[in-house]
Image: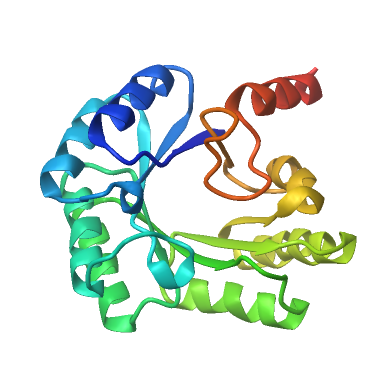
Length: 228
C-alpha cells in the first residue's frame, strides 16, 4: 500500500491535498503538527473530508522532529479525539510518557483505531542491538504496528534496518522500518517486499515530510514496474 503523507500549514491546503489523493492513495497521513493552529475543529474537518480512505493521524512532538507547540497533554488529547472521529491509525512516539501512551492504547481499544508506536533518529542509525531493543519495547508497550525510521550513513545502516523484519516475523509483529536520506531511499521500496504494510510518499516534489521520501507518482511507477 501507498500512504501519502500530508503536512500543510492551513486547513484549505490540507483539504485540497486530501481531495487530490483520497481516490488515488491507499492511506493518507494527516500531520496535525504541521498546522499553525491545530485544534479539534480543524481535526474534525480533515477527517470528515477523508471519508472513504484510511487515515493515519500524527501529531509529532518537537522533541522527535515535529512542530507541535502545545503541552504533551494537549498533543495526546488531539490524538485521542482523532480516534473518536474515526481515524484508522494513530501514530505516537514510543518515547512518549508511558501514562499518555496507555491513555491512547485504551482509547484505541474503545474506538477500534490501530496504534502505531514510532521511533525516529534523524541523525544516524543506532546499533543493531539497540534497534532490536526498540522493536521489542514497541511490542511490549502494546503497539499494533511498530515504526522504526533512522538516518542511513552507509549501506550497513540499511542492512541493519532491513534485518529487523526477520525478528518482526518471528514475533508475529507488524513493522514499518526503513532509512531516511539518499542512501536509505531504496529501503523504502524494499521494505514492501519483506513485510512493511505500506510506504510513505510525498504529495509532490518539495512536499516531503522526511528526507528521502519519494513523490507519489514516482513511487507508484516503481512499484508497478516490479509488479510486472
